Image 1: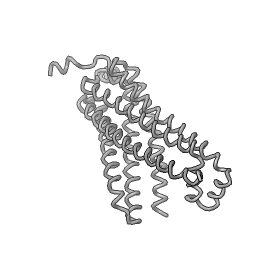
Image 2: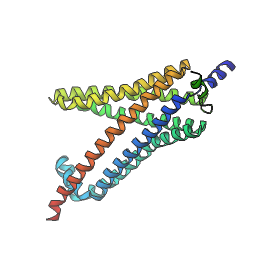
Image 3: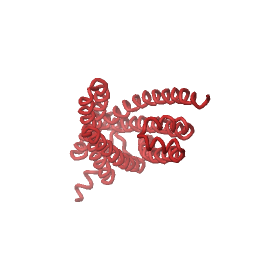
Image 4: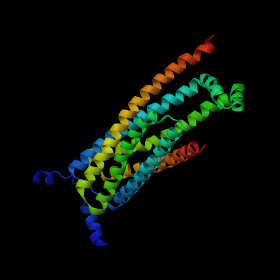
Length: 146
Length: 131
């Protein structure tokens, strides 16, 4: 056990790996920021142009749902749903932002805690991504079967 | 070589807790990549069924390339952690860096198209209500 502990601590992150980690941090941060902008654009559009969205959905959705939107009962719900989904996605993408930020901090200041926090955020981010991907795969399976 | 040895980051190391997190990261990255391959396969079959295979091929090529990078990252990270190989660790991080670089470029393109589409929909959609 003692040998195992000491050999693990001997496994250092060298200069090249640290440079790669720094670059990953920068790109992950940029991806999270652009994803955040994309979510904000879509949510704001749906929230402020609810009338326009309602107009398009009335034709796109099945008749009974379209009528409900036309009556105005779902017209208010639509921006609220968009805001809630947007908020969930923002929380999700914040994990990637934290990962990027912590990697930059870890490599710049050689901060071991930031590195650990970063990989913890990345693990959670990947778990959520896995769940979203599985939902997507199941919906694709239904599309394929129908 | 000597220079390389001396420039090792003294402050950053793979502690047991970091190793545990990295192993989970590798496992979940592998799961995400495999699910993405399955999803893409299903989309190809659906497109084939609907005779719209050509449009799907570009999307499939990009998705497959991106997820190969993610899978390489996961596999090399697992190997690096089990063998304590610093070279493999660097290669693994290099794959993740390329993955995020390409994702960023694609996101810029997609965001531009969506912003443009929303602007067009916003203008054309507001016309019936302005009358």
